[in-house]
Image 1 (cartoon, rainbow, N blue to C red):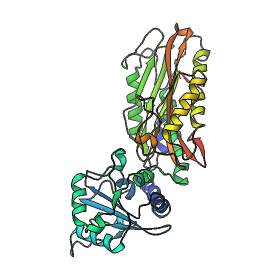
Image 2: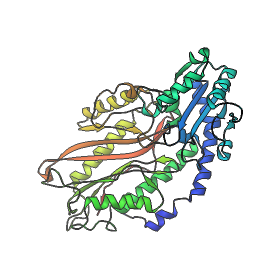
Image 3: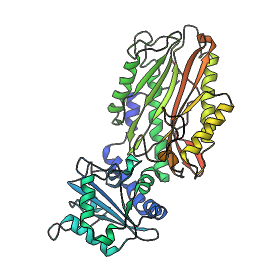
Image 4: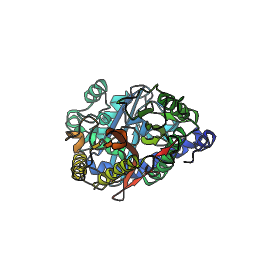
Length: 421
């Protein structure tokens, strides 16, 4: 299988200045065209996002231009749905030229205090529902700290205070919704992920009998950094070997081993999360044994069953449980633990199974599926291989996909053939 050089991979990562221009263009499009629709859908006509420097709400960085890498002192962003399709974006914080490109500066620190200005602007606009990022169940919708909540509420008049509600669904929908431009770019981002894995699972990196699983994992981590990207978790390599129940990561990779990787990084403000598999050919072998290739095909079949149940409006639990039932009918020993992905690796949206909970998931699993959202299609099957003395092997796959236009599209495709080393 062909693989890219490190130099070629590095050329495909844009300089920071060009990245900033792209992500700021996306931000403007999202504020002008995505946010009004979501505020209307969730019934919030005034959304307040409050963060303190280095204690950021998970949402706030997705609302700020690329040159702002953290909140400044106390950053308050507010969004007023003035009329259908129109949102007024306001900033109540330290003035910043970059922020002023997207927000109207509403606070004059020389005239009054920050909370006083915010409360006055809310009272003047008289919103019916004031949304705050507080949530019992969604961590990404629960970014408002207790102190900031108390100070905000103390500043409001009784009438405004009575209109404060949780904005958890608005926060989740803002984070999960992708624009057409973002989805197009996401394809190229995932191609980089595939190409890193293709090189890792090749003779360029792996020398059987010498290279260990840990060596390959750290090679991935170093390569992600070297080409200008940021890993969001430590890559892993799992070795499965005939006759051994568990192979340690510091063990040399040997002919006949089945390898599995898990790797993810951020680029252009979007996360990847990819799992693929490889086989180390024995002397005289030209391809993996038929049983192993057939098992991978069965894992692909589980993907088809699962994504076939993606229908807008269904909950994560409905998609997950219906898929498990169908897989069982076909004799597939399946586990599904798919998660949303986007601004965060384990992103905002419906939970569809958990690796340690293959049953109904309260609250987060009851969130519905919407169009223009992305998922790490993560699952596995277990299969006994007669050529391995009926040893049970796990075939685990993960690939980022978009649900858009009422269909699932794998971004940069999916693995249907094992990498061969």
